[in-house]
Image (cartoon, rainbow, N blue to C red):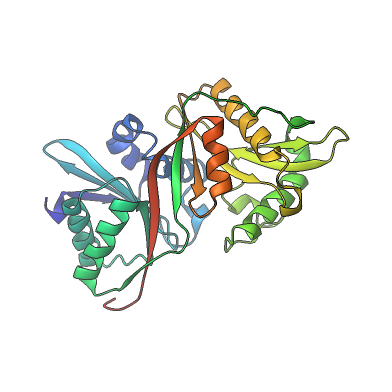
Length: 290
């Protein structure tokens, strides 16, 4: 596997023309590739900063074998790679002067790239504290007993409510992003559809969101209940409702990520019918050698 087997482009349409079938053939492991490519395609490259996004395709023997994307200053996102493929990518990026500060992928791929990046650049990798598990929905099993209340899908008239809840979620998970009326259109939250779980008196108590249908797959993303309202089954109810809506929207696959350090959420998703697909990790890089 040679470094020059990698084709790099700033044109998302070129990337999808080359790699779209490959990505859609295994939408679960490629969820981040599909999601971010679609965001760039719809919003335009300028929506993500002054530095152009970069996409990469590994072609060997006339076939696509792997892909990556990078939206500076965000992490380098990788499809599953073998150690040999990770080494060839690290060598190629280093030679071209691309120096990501973080890599995110399934655990084996992220580790292989981090080790290769250290060999080629001298940068020291540090495993990020937060590690997540990717789940795929099998047979949806709604919670029983079901909490009292109902689901309400947020519409355009509910923008302020969506902004509020996503801001609360981003602070709870420690995201380095400001979510308010001025920044909303620039965030990853803007392209989702949100559902609130409300108690019988109309009080909102939990929220879940889902990304658009991409490659036959929908990702459930943003599930949040304020700390003082947890333990009543609200998150299970709203997650089940959004999962049902994803299937009704035509998704063949429904996936989500859960923080591996949170046994409550992992157990909840498994009770709903989600099954582990892979563990994911991120490594931060020092500036040594760059």
